[in-house]
Structures are given as structure tokens and as C-alpha cells.
Image (cartoon, helix red, strand yellow):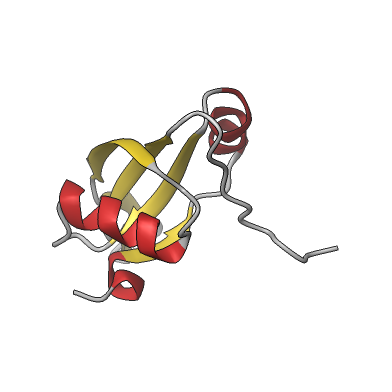
Length: 98
């Protein structure tokens, strides 16, 4: 798998911003077929100056909701990777914005 297929997008929430600034951990939505080794290699290829220490993976479950009588909605499940970087490494997700 190419590294652009492994990393789909970063997760930008309050919690992920706090983790990035305080603990140097970044959260990404990744391909469900990707494993930890592929995720680590993809991050290091996307940002060559970064060294990955640890990768944690969680599979987020699908969510179901009922709106009206017979109409039901469903949100698909996805895979999340929390990547811990080595001290001194940093990823600029919004480089050049502003």
C-alpha cells in the first residue's frame, strides 16, 4: 500500500490538539487494512524529519441512529491511529495556512 492510501486524514478535535501540543501525539484516520508497521512507515515517509516512537490503533465502531418512523441512518466504522513521536519531532498539519 502506498503511504497516501494508509493515511486518510488527521483528526482535528480539541482532544487531539491537546495531545499534539502536550504529549506529542497525533491522531489520524487510517485505512482499515493497515497495520502498525505500515502506519509508522507512512508517517515517516510523509514527514521525513519525523521519527515515530509508538503507534496505537483503535477501531471505532459504526453508529446507528433512528430518525423517523422507518428511516434509519448509519455512520460507518473507521480506524484511528494515535502516533507518538520522538522528543524533538513535530508535525505541522496546517503548514502555510493563515
